[in-house]
Image 1: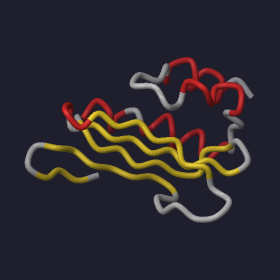
Image 2 (image 1 turned 60 degrees about the vertical axis):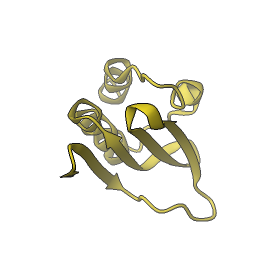
Image 3 (image 1 turned 135 degrees about the horizontal axis):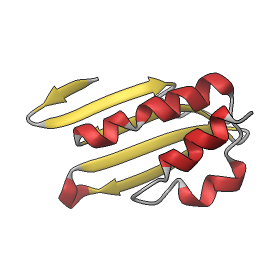
Length: 96
């Protein structure tokens, strides 16, 4: 995690795209917001977030999902949106 010119940036897990990984990207240039999740066979293996500190705080849930190798296939449609329900994803991650 780092901050430049008032914009917070963080990454967890893999951050470079490569063959076999599916990038899911959300960006809003006017709000200085960018998020990239990298999936490998339906499981998140990495993430990059640029934006506010709140956006970076959400990476704790993403990191838990990476560690637990949570299959997010059924929520894939939600991952490209501006807001992700990390509470629901966290619940699904820990209930296994």
